[in-house]
Image 1 (cartoon, helix red, strand yellow):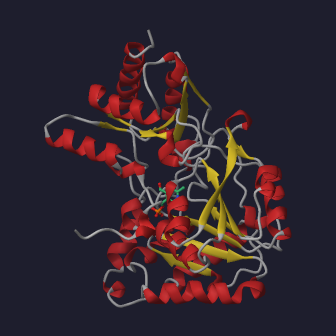
Image 2 (spheres, rainbow, N blue to C red):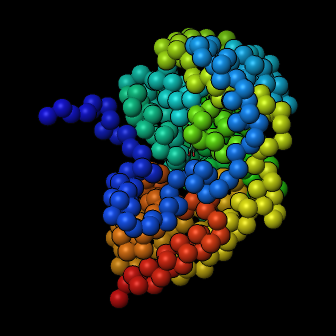
Amino acid sequence: MITRSSRLTHVAYDIRGEIYEQSQALAKQGHQILSLHIGDPAPFGYKVPESIIKNMAANLERAQGYGDAIGLLEAREALQVAYAKRNFTDLQLEDIYVGNGVSELALISLQALLNDGDEVLVPTPDYPLWTSAVNLFGGKTVYYRCDEAANWYPDPEDIRQKITSRTKGIVLINPNNPTGAVYPADVLKRIADIAAEHNLVIFSDEIYDKILYDGVQHTSIATLNEDVICLTFSGLTKNYRVPGFRAGWMIISGPKQKATDYIGGITLLANLRVCGNQQVQFAIKAVLEGHQCIEDLTAPGGRLRIQRDLCYQKISQIPGVRCSKPMGAFYMFGKLNLAKFDLASDYDFVLKLLKEEKVLIVHGTGFNHYTNDHFRVVFLPDTEILTTAINRMAAFLERHQSK
Ligand code: PLP
């Protein structure tokens, strides 16, 4: 028997886990599955910005050779300009890394930092990449709570209390997946100050930074305290609706002279994988300078805004279910009152919903939520699919009321 490494013991990605595999098996048997489980716009008819396709096609010849390990120069120049406009100060071209999505750069950044037993403060719930990456590289995830009763904002005092002599960093996901929360500047500032005081690295995953509703503003934590080393992550995946093209970036800011060894480690790992996919990196300049982002879809009357409202309205009307209105991204994180149903847990709910109604969502514990009574719904599908899926969920829960 060939077995997997013990390093994978606490590595999981339930968005494509066991329940997803069962949905694939059902689909093979001919069942039509309504998939509300993954943040991929492609199957739901969103238009890819033309500038991306045009640039990739036009530059295919130029993209044949290996590129710079930290990213194509013209992409990094465009990012330098874009982030300077967002109040990132003193940003140098070598502070910008472009790679195959946030996922790759998150793995590199944690692998370069962690020794066995080092602690990283990770939100609960989180996007499972972060928990898994910390565990994969020998670190220990220490969860801080995002409080549902407080709009799912992180609690800076909880963060402070969980810092030990082994703490190396704090992960933030803002706007948040799975909760849809967008954090206010005062909460972020308190966290930035704590990180500066304790010499911690902030990993700020801002991949949804342009997917905002109801006029809410996004603030990058890196702009709130110049004394903290901050790694800010984003990319084309969500804002520009091209997850398959694999283009992400990471911006290092703060007192870099304090972290030259760590930054050298990041560059070493970037060199080790030679370079990211080149063709899509040509498009970064074009999309950052163009006007083909996602704002039209999130503005009043825009597709995502309509779907968000529908999803929120319909799910919050189901007896025994509660949810907060997402202010960013395209996820809704609902809570089941388990006492009202004959369901043992979030997992039980999601599995039976798939089997009985052919609707696929993800259980909250798949996002490392600290209680087993939440679920995440993706509201990328159109209103017709969403209506059918949520109606089926409501009918399922009606049938499963506890006797
Ligand atoms: N970070 C968060 C919070 C996400 O939700 C996702 C994808 O769902 C990713 C990172 C993955 O990003 P990428 O496609 O750039 O690897």
